[in-house]
Length: 373
Image (cartoon, rainbow, N blue to C red; front, side):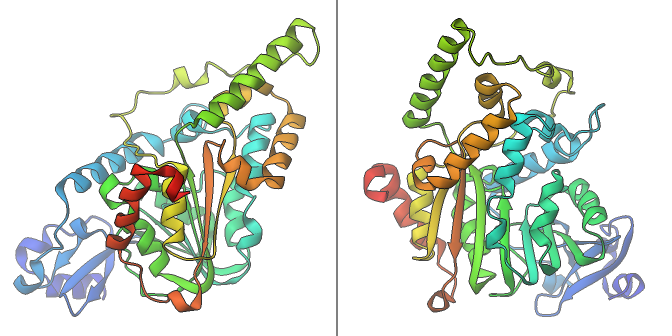
């Protein structure tokens, strides 16, 4: 409904909650709830919804700890992560990533495009927790889709994302654990660096929700950071020893990074960013309980700091490491720090997998990782 129609339907106390810049609203007649549209951004967050009557004022019960974590993450990104620094980079990118066309920047770009072949074509692509599309290569995900739907809890991110995707994009504020979409509607889903920032108690709910709205036969691609394993530590130790030997012999000396002090020039974040990382066994168990058609692959073996320490600005090293990761994805998964989880929804799994069923295997994986693997 339009803005004027919305005001006519709202009780007096709810009218005061209408956000500035509201142009209309999506309305749920069954729950008598309105979700405001601010500019081109639809707001489906439960805490921002408007009750059309006293009967519709009853909100969905939200876990207080999970809600507190969500607000903390939202504040971090709105006030710091998706703000640009003096160099024109997003603070989040400057802290955790690399965009320069050095070896590490090329290495990261290759990894972001590694699963592009799984995003074949269709009408709707869902970018879950899209952020502002901080890397240019992210735009490639929707090349073969008619529409790109970007959701996030940060309005700062979505206003920038809307400008980048243009008329083919639809952006909305939404909770990934409670998506405002019907079952089986998206031809592909991408969720990058997201699940670890969701409350531990709700991570399985988020994965189940993404799977619910995925069309049968389509891919759900999740990129996530995982804790360092002993295999990763052993690999890094071995490569560091080789590097020291080569430096002593003056063979293949690594060039020092010129921008190593850059993170120190960033403003201070408002608080620590919440992060709960799951290990490889947990992700294998979660994927297997969604579908028997899944793969868990190593996306990047090294963090930005590790790659620059080992290889400096070497583009050749980036190509070699990425080639090895592509040739041996399962082996790379046991040593990597960034994981790609690819789940295909098969026709016989058309209904949502209950999160309670996933939690049963979660406890098993934590007790016996070998059994879960």
